[in-house]
Image (cartoon, rainbow, N blue to C red; front, side, top):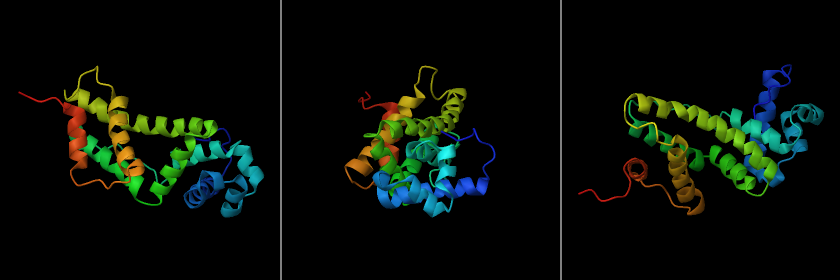
Length: 193
């Protein structure tokens, strides 16, 4: 959802708009987020915002992908298990430490009820998954997983476990949650014998 069709916007002005979008989302939720509010907070005319983003869903989609608060670097610990533990810890931080937690929960929670926002959120997840793929490419090169392993399913299982535990169950993540979740995904629940 990066907005790249109009190359003439000053980077500082764009950053002001995207930051204002996320600040208002964290404060007021998706329902309270308005283009007028973003314009006032960023001190940019609302017509400028509409010229770049046709809706608040499109604006929020760009803000999610480009947000410093939600930024992500694929870990490279030297092992798949280490990379996945780092990934799980990153998702846990995203969902538990403000302002990122307020942003993520408000945006992704609202996407369930708003098709335009759900479509915009796809851009965020596509960008995130593209950044995660090197983890699995390196793991294949090291012989840790075979070609039939589904990286998206692995990420979904781990991130979904964190999301369910933290957001829906409102439970803290105990210290060994990450290790247990990664081990379960990599090795399954079967008894060995």
